[in-house]
Amino acid sequence: MVENASFCLVQRMSVSQRQRLQDTPPNPKKLNAEDILDQATDNIAELNETNLNMYNELEEQKDPEEKISVLKMRMKEVNERLDENLAKQEEVQAKLRKVLKKMKDCKDFEEGQ
Image: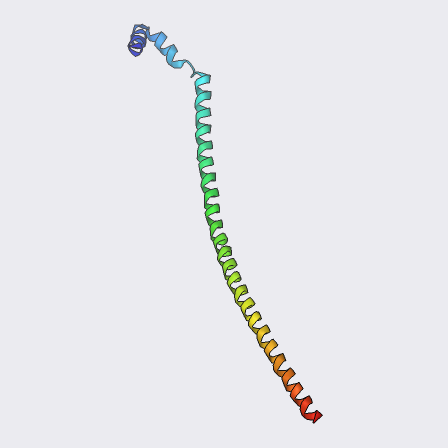
């Protein structure tokens, strides 16, 4: 309804009045608002791109973190095997000492006779 009223007003204007209306520079507030809207749109696009880049960087960091986790698990397994082998080695060395002591005792016994 408001559009019809403004259309009627424009129709009633003389040609010179219509010409002056067309020659009137655009409203600076409207232009400023449009500029602000354009800047905001550009900023949103830039922020979206920045967020996407940050997300991709985080995704790339997950691979090294997973690799580190796997390596830590492997190191733990290797250390456990090493501990088991060290324990076995100590047992063997203890048995060998006993055998050597018995051999020495036997030799000492034989020499003593």
